[in-house]
Amino acid sequence: MPGSNDVIPPTRPVIGEREIEAAVRVLRSGMVVQGPEVAAFEQEFSELVAGRHCVAVNSGTSALYLSLLALGLGPGDEVVVPSFSFAATANAVRLVGAEPVFADIDSASFCLDPAAVEAAVTARTAAVMPVHLFGHPAAMDQIMAVAQRYSLAVVEDAAQAHGAALGGRPAGTFGAAGCFSFYPTKNMHSLEGGMVTTADAELARTLRLLRNQGMEQRYANEIVGANVRMTDVAAAVGREQLRQLPEWTRQRRANAKYLDAAITRAVTPAVADGAYHVYHQYTVRVRGDRDAVQQGLRERGVGSAVYYPTPIHRLRPYVNAEGVRGPLPETDRAAREVLSLPVFPSLTEAELARIATAVDGVAVAA
Image (tube, rainbow, N blue to C red):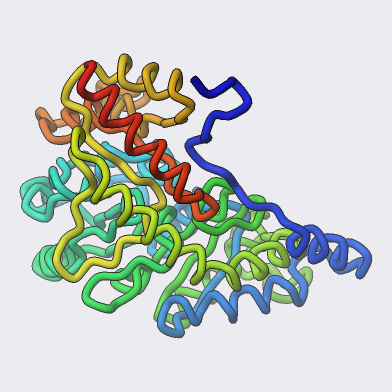
């Protein structure tokens, strides 16, 4: 049995010498906030999203919040969101004074079900916020069709989808805005940070004003804004991570392919036609006692994680909200059954074999 120091963790963030040297270089330069590194990071990230304008901020949550704010969302508006997601998705809606309305997910992809989105639309609906969950793109072709029918703004929560695509089109390029996170556990990170992508130059300018106290020129405030800027240290780390992202993505997908073939006792992740999955998480369904499976994996030296055991509509701030209008069966089923396994790029083939053997062993026992 593997010892306590031999456990494969659920995720393994990378902070290597390249990132450390980049951070030190910026610190020594004395230009540490909203300087040349941020501008360079925005320009380089633009290549990942088909040349869209990119606006760097201090977190993925800030990216969502500022996008909704820049689009004019506020009190009286409803925004259709999934409940099977991190709370930031709905929190950003509440922070601008609008109300999240929860729609159910597709059972295969764990992303918003387009039919459920359409069923949730009312006269107050102003926007929809699909989440590209676990690195799988949402059904954006269908969601955009719904949005067009009802004149809804679309803000993509692409926090987990760096490099994901649908039909060859990158995540973050379908809606009015796409929002990425650079938290350390993401496929790439900047220690902490976020990015908004948009094809609209005026929207990009508004976002730049909002992130910097409402001003482009010092003391020439144009609107009410806040301080949600990205530091140059974070941007420098992000630039180094972005350069490594293509190889990391290739390795994540190779690891997922190995696990797909090797695991036989759990339901492995589905991939929709035309979807390019980047496997932020490798999420299986466990139909037995999930707690027992997770404990059994731990005893066999394999870490795992459950995202998200409590759907947002069952969290305290939202449980009695008007956006909870009925049961969300696929959301509740996913919350009971999902289990995310290690898929990070530095896994060895021996570790992948241990993961698959452990999953099949404990799933049979459960």
